[in-house]
Image (cartoon, helix red, strand yellow):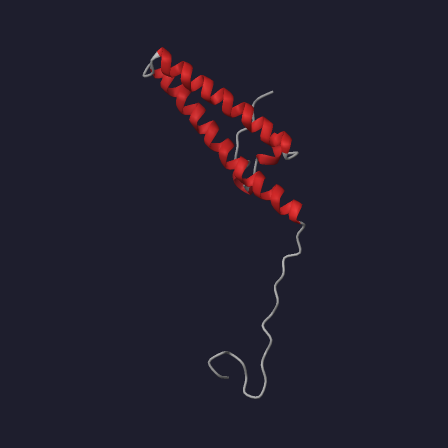
Length: 107
């Protein structure tokens, strides 16, 4: 073999690897992943805000601002999910033995 990995006297064709995927499926999967990350961060921010409210470390103005921000972010997430035809369950990645990524709200 020479330095290119082909044998003397003939070239060995490189294996072709092609992903057969519908562009719409790729877009939906990417959007789902991005929205999952945003939802995870939103839930973490919400828990942090609740903890800080319970500890009394926020002013009334800060509580109001955080509440409004989280509410608007929740509305935008709902809008984006609906636009791309996703449900909240679509954003909850199954981590196998660890369970779902996002905690489910008790019904």
